[in-house]
Length: 244
Length: 151
Image: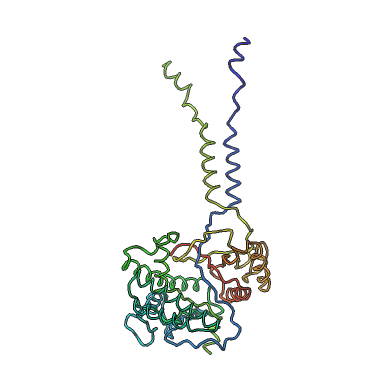
């Protein structure tokens, strides 16, 4: 009798309620946590500029003006446009395939031009006495060296002028949804151009370039230089007032 | 006859629930890993716009959120309001909020802070533009128009 008891040991703990406890925990986590991974369209706002007078006037052809009015209608470069055509419009602005008068004038960047400019600026730098000039020439040299690297990686390319910019302006009653859609289309246009360039020159997809790999970083930088993302979020202009 | 009766008495054996806790635990771990803690209680209704060109925000610790939308409580009207942290805020409170968010972080990380605008898609641009101007004034230039993937 005594022997039998010992062999059995302490009775098993009933695990029947384990499921209930786990359920409770599960429901707690379901309620207190969220699934949504935050994603969106990243933008850099321009810093506040105090004196607007010192800003150089940008040539009309270098600005792609997109207006959205209070009724969510688009006016692109003075012409009404459907949002479906905006992507193609942005691509045309960025590439200017026909060298049209009203689109930005592109300059051909070749290795020779880059080397020449670097040499020029080096000689200027050597002769410069003021600190301010030195900084400026050094910046120029860095800029052209970046371009030279891009030419080496991608071959000769047509560069957009520095002032080329897509300017987006909205009315006060424009819906946020429309604004995001327009931002999205412009972004998509630029991404498609980058993808095309990447496929043509590298045989790889731009989105598959690894931004943690050093060589790929250079490629990404070069491609971004050819098709820069310049969407201006500049000073708000009330579109509705502008038209009066 | 007797054999038939015997069977009926036994019935089908009960399904073992011994593995039920394991299944639930698996679910639990799945949710614990894939979700994050809710940080604020939303006071505004937000349905995000859809976009296809979205970038995921990698580091959640470096993101501050601004919520803009109509209040969830109907007695507060339908005019879009700004929510910072856990309460409604006025436009002129954004500056202080930005500073607080910046000072909270390590100096090295401060330039990497993104302000994510979670804005209801029906909102007028006026309030969004005003908020953007405030952000520019307080030198918080990296922003994100939060949108759901789609389209």
